[in-house]
Length: 368
Image (tube, rainbow, N blue to C red; front, top):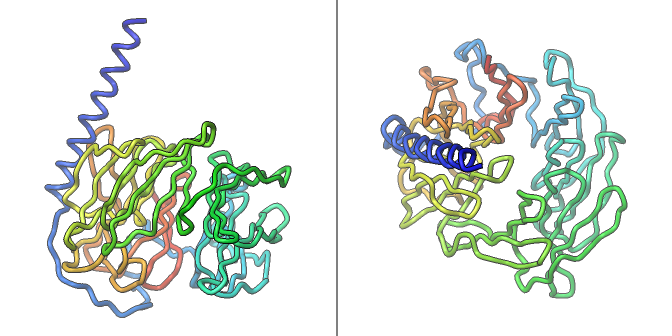
């Protein structure tokens, strides 16, 4: 028993050392100053310049996409809300329209972890409305009014939502199968974001901005206790790993953005002078991070505000960062300065999918 505890302790030390050395490696290899990049928006990248492993999945501009892991199918929405699907194993075929309903003023799409369902927010910002799309029926199911934020449970069976009704806020859980709702806690705050990273733990946070200090809180859904994880940070934005054990945190102090690796409790594991933007990364359960990392870092910008407002664009290289070994490797070297600004990165089998912010199209990078 003592030997097992000793081995586990040594393993944790090795992972921590790897994370620290990973931070040092990234600091040395990817910290490059730059000037403001003012691109031609929606310019079509020259496909002939792309690596043979990097391909455009289809010609259509999309609003967002997700992958149904049960059927290995890519679902994607056009700007009007029309939903189509295509096999992830054979993207050479033409996409099939599965729902042609128009959706006005789309704001965001939040797929369940297994991709069998997705929640869309629309009629934004005048009258935010939420509905669930079920890939089994290809139909929409409206959620109750007055919802301002939602988050899927890790097992995809429940949906948490923040409701603001009659000037009273509350977090409730909606069971997909039984269609029953259970209140978790009443809230005085009414404008928050939600994420559900562990079975018994939700996170809620204020809208991030470089101009306002915001915080991140943890809510235990069993005993209904709240505790702060990160307090009063400017530009606070976090992207969590699929298992909720690691996160990439962005902060912006005096208009100088920086990113760090944190653990599940919000404690800093490694400081990175190179800028990893949380929306441009995916952290896998195996402590591996796939990121689109800008070749140059614009100076004087407000992050994450300017990124979300599409006021700044980057030219990315794609990296794989292994936290356990501390190694960072380039998986797409953008030597030809192709206009690639990767967002919504998703690893599916041997493919890395992402939306290129320049043309709004879906791309696939072969990882084999």
